[in-house]
Image (cartoon, rainbow, N blue to C red; front, side):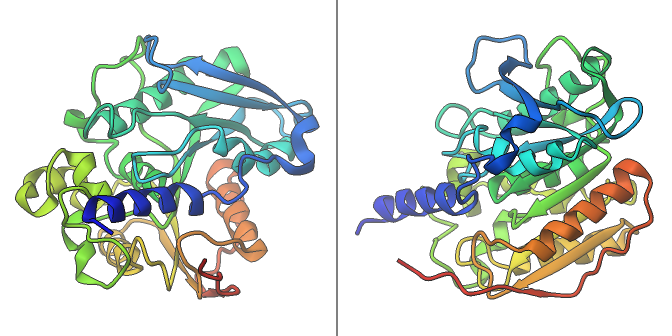
Length: 318
């Protein structure tokens, strides 16, 4: 198999494994109203759309905090529709509204287009909060893989003017977020090949190289500019990171190094190692910890969020 074919297969694996069956909203579909394909950037681009989930019964008084999901797919594939399944259970509680964010893929535009899109979507949420009964001061972001990278960027670059972009009619709004849930997102492209895996991340056709517009090691400044690790400061948003110990696509040390840097800077960070976990996993215990984390930062609760590892059944390789 050629390197190009290997890279294409790896990107396809990212798209499949990050959101297993997440397009299904289970038994919760009758619990929320869904508005699809809402434009957030003032354009006709179908990628610059979001889906809005509003609970039919609100169990919290006043405006609802928002959980916004950003999909994975190696920045090359994926679709915001997968976020509906991820958000359905949370929204069904009546305690949250949900937003699933689409963004331009690397085949259409290279970095920083993707973070510009995500920031424009956050600004749209704030600008339209009153209209939909949302609390624009309580916005969590949650993402998997490439989406994990993007939400980590949102959490670390709320104070980086150069990454705001000029998209959309709501430039008077802030793109800062309240907290972040990052599932196995890359954090430092230049070191991804330091650990064995199924992708040659330094190849000129790797997902990371396609994102920045050239081979990672030949475009080091661009690679650093696209890395959440670059922007860590003490005022970053609290973050919960979950990462599989056996991830073959995004090595676990990507999250370990990121968490260490965040903690050293004084940021509230919880890293949960998923023992036997690959690139994608399911765990009811992790679901409970994420719910507790969101309750703390969006509802002012005092839940304990354990950082103890969670063991899952190994996924069978096909």
